[in-house]
Image 1 (cartoon, rainbow, N blue to C red):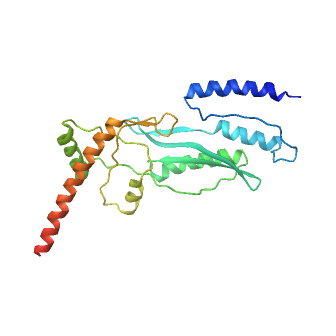
Image 2 (cartoon, helix red, strand yellow):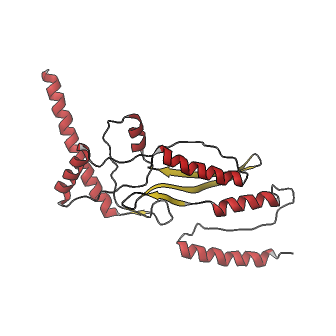
Image 3 (cartoon, one colour):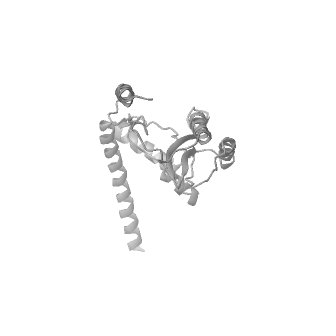
Length: 224
């Protein structure tokens, strides 16, 4: 027989330790007695679920020559629906479809070994940034004019709207710009306020140039 009072005291110490370690007061673990009629998994299913979650190959699978990730996967949500357990994972890829498929095949083989059915529910395309375009050259020049130093250019392992633009319009020039963000997608995510202020100054200077170009084009059209 398990003494719930003793077990809850142990959990309280664990929660306190985790909150301090991860600086997150929202962490909570609780236990309570339930009726035997509540939903539960048998021993085999429990072992399959635990094995899958504990051995799932989270992390980066491929990096570019500069050491930036271009192919990765991680587990997401886990929930129960219609007496089935659903486990969602996300693959982020800036690699070619053929290389991405190799990772998908590996995950499907792993899931099949755990008797888990794989379903592809959503496709968010990745993209590779072309860093030698007139638009990026303009942005670099504008940054240097504004801050009197070169900007920091790097490939990021993000799934952004640029991916949709790249997929539908191969001739479009695009780029993602942002302030300094630290520890994204984690409990420690934060953004630099001073960087946000500089970013706003930079963005306004770009929009100002855009307004001038639109005004110039409108005048030329009116003459014709």
